[in-house]
Length: 189
Image (cartoon, rainbow, N blue to C red):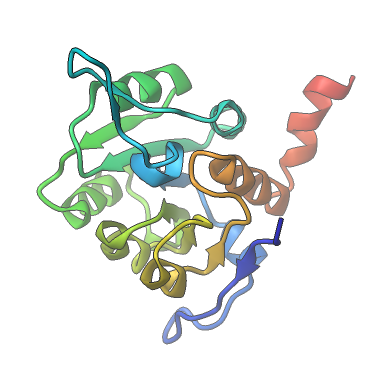
């Protein structure tokens, strides 16, 4: 599997920064659902109930993230009881479903959590995620993201959405922040 790669495409006042430099400032993860937390497939059973498939390692990654006192938020363009359920199971702080626009949700998140752009990492896969990705201090595209999202990202994961991409991001963030050894120690001792 190819390694994720860092893209320093955002210039201007923030300048060129490495992944580690950006990662050290991150306090909040913003995650899309379809194509990021799930594999992007939407399946309906014979009664019209929606099904989604989530990766257990992504879920574990979010649990580790929260154990360090960090928070996460889900922002999805679709209404889905499954997304809300998964968010509750994983301790996600807030779930925004079908916001008028993802940018409106982003502004509310910044205000609600009193965070600067630099303290936010956003993970996305499709065009609807671009308004958030273009503002976040660390923009991440999953491996299966559309080309426009990959070009806007600082980092592209080696793993596809719904197949360990979120775990990869969490592990890299916590490593850059010096917190990954604390997570490991819980299980290695």
